[in-house]
Length: 254
Image 1 (cartoon, one colour):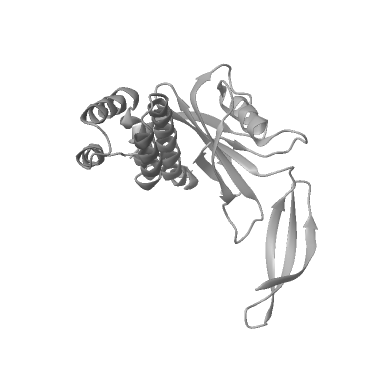
Image 2 (cartoon, rainbow, N blue to C red):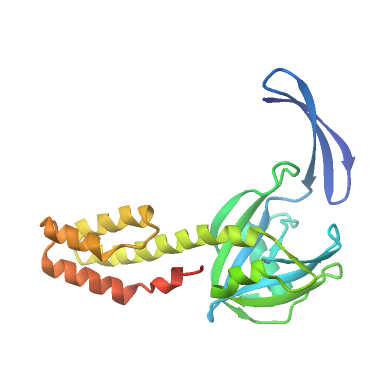
């Protein structure tokens, strides 16, 4: 398939609508109607987690649906010159009153409704967020902040409060976030092991962090020991390092 032309058929204040002409695989001509937001970048959202392991969500009234939708805090890059990380930090503060030190971590980006809109979304992660002020949403924003314990998030999304719909992108973030946190944990342990001179073990950590989502089995350590690739002392110390430095419950979202 290939694009052969496009025409703007509606040019509003916040969006434009295009007719995009295309040619199919068999050479047939077609027209696709698409929507594009007028912004300076992608849509941004954030998976924000408090020190008590609570996820910050928003219950917001969505006019197109005529009802409330539970979503991750999100916003548009509607101010020229702001970076995505600056925008999502500002939006989180304005809509929820929560903020965090440093920068958010990008965990996922890409299209989210490619059959209709040309927009893409960037989803960030921030931990240890704290409430620092009262929310100050705009007049057209009807938002209530909801805190959900991380271990209850799946049940909450599958059984939302009466009168609410749920943005299904919330659960789509979880597997990716879980993988990212696993890689971060094993990178930390790997650097500690490298600092102690156990290079073989460190390389093994690097491979396994990508192959099994960070859940390194003690059986692997035992196997390396039996093969003579690490000493008994190294095997015991490595296991101790893992027990001391990694809280695998951090990965148990669902």
